[in-house]
Length: 342
Image (tube, rainbow, N blue to C red; front, side, top):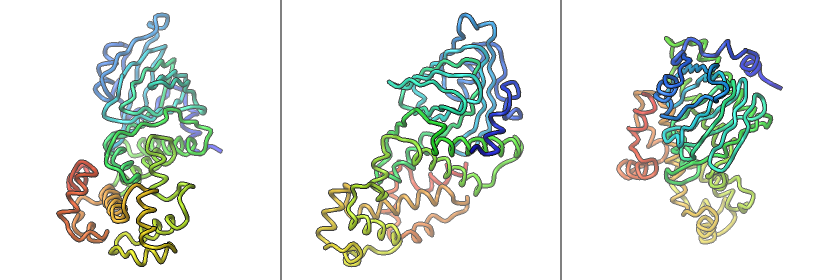
């Protein structure tokens, strides 16, 4: 059953575009559209279909937030769009009207309202043909997504590539569509002169990252399931040890207690972590603490004390913590805090 926000999103005709107060581009000139929209997203080739060139029009409205934006983009007529690799961001495209054929790497899909949306990864080359198409588009900064994926998977920051097909009739697709509809309605209510509170901004970032990284298949999905203890192949003893470690991540590591909780010996536990998680027990604990610090900084107030947060999460040596954080996320904790609140 569709939410009221989704019903509102789908009920409007393309002419009554969304986010009208956030207009960035309104033109019927192909070169002007390519240049102006390219400045907002990324440079791209834009060509109208020969038979529909006379009916070309472009509209782009954009409500920008910290780390993400919600957009309404509409093209009249048939238009070929070739952005290549997006490089700096991920795009979730939910069709509101018309149709789009999208090729992302070796995958080709037909996108249509209430059936199929698309998720474009920054490292996968993309080409699209939109036909009288309007879409709600969520842009998420690449660094933000890759850092959170690394935290969830217990890995260092690296490339994340998603399955580009989002089935809107699947539970995860419906949930994502509902969230984007609600975000678009919220932006319209707040307006260009208003702003979300830091807490509301952080809540939206967390919800959107959760939708993508836990709801849509990508290259680190299996690693996240394994690191979180959700993988079916994980023995019960290791699952119990991992859960205990997570619940007590702020406390000093006690191998004897961990072995007692898991019901197996310390040596078997150490070998099991290496075999099933690919890391030592102490490394997993460090990764849990680093992930907790990264998540806390993503929601922190501008005047938050990094030292207090680090001590609360079990770090006792701030220099080593800062080095490990930089190795994992490619920046210092203070840089993360500044970027999150900018």
